[in-house]
Amino acid sequence: MRAVIQRVSRAKVSVEDEIVGEIGRGILVLLGVADGDAETDAAYLLEKTINLRVFEDANDKMNFSLLDIKGDLLVVSQFTLFGDARQGRRPSFSKAAAPEQANRLYKFFVVEARKQIAKVETGKFQAMMDVELVNDGPVTILLDSEKLF
Image 1 (cartoon, helix red, strand yellow):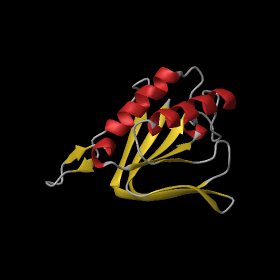
Image 2 (cartoon, helix red, strand yellow):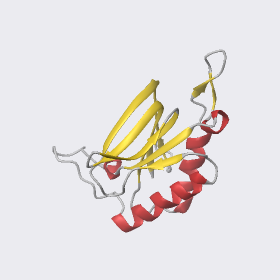
Image 3 (cartoon, helix red, strand yellow):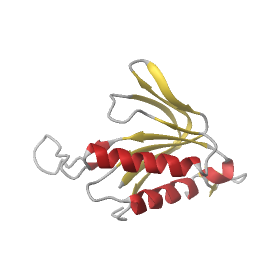
């Protein structure tokens, strides 16, 4: 499983010009599920995401997590995180999970997040979405449940 974590001052996701998820200060997660991923992968990425110290303290040091600041979380499914463009010009998505498996783990991630974060919003699985964000910093972190980076 992979995640692109972006610290945001605000973010929203729309489907067909209708806002389906919107947050204020917090984290936008673009979440990709690989074939063979399990709930343990989702739980690991969620724990890393909500505890990642990417918010500044009074001394402008990144010492606070999403939990510490009681921030919002926007989770958007993005299978293209498993696009492999090493050969040719068209990315291969053969390592991405099948939609049923990906949706199950995406929902698991969101359900578990809602147990710990007051405001968790989502995109719409398998929809063409417009994601708007103000990346605060900018701060962008890549996470992978296999710890490849």
